[in-house]
Amino acid sequence: MKRHAAIAALTALFAAGAAWAGQITLQQAIEKVERETHAKVLSAETKHFGKHTIYRIKVLTRDGQVRVIEVPAEQN
Image (tube, rainbow, N blue to C red; front, side, top):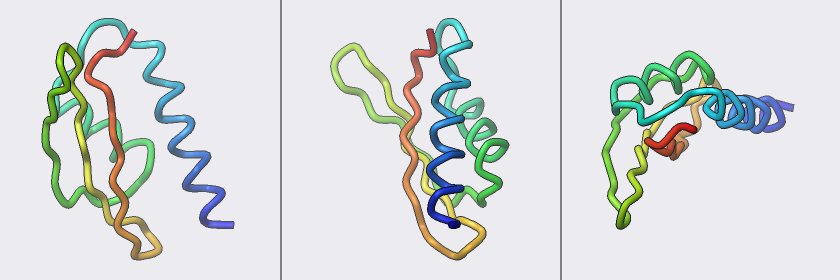
């Protein structure tokens, strides 16, 4: 059941991102992940793939699991 809640939260996270226009900062991505998952952020980094930027955010979930969530900087 917790796994389903986590999947639902991640789906909502990326669906909500579609409403944003332009590019978000790493700090905005961290705040978004905290708000949507209610998890503790352990670390965050920026990865560049050609013209695309991805924020990799490592979190500790409420049930004690470590997860990595990737958030695209381009939000359109």
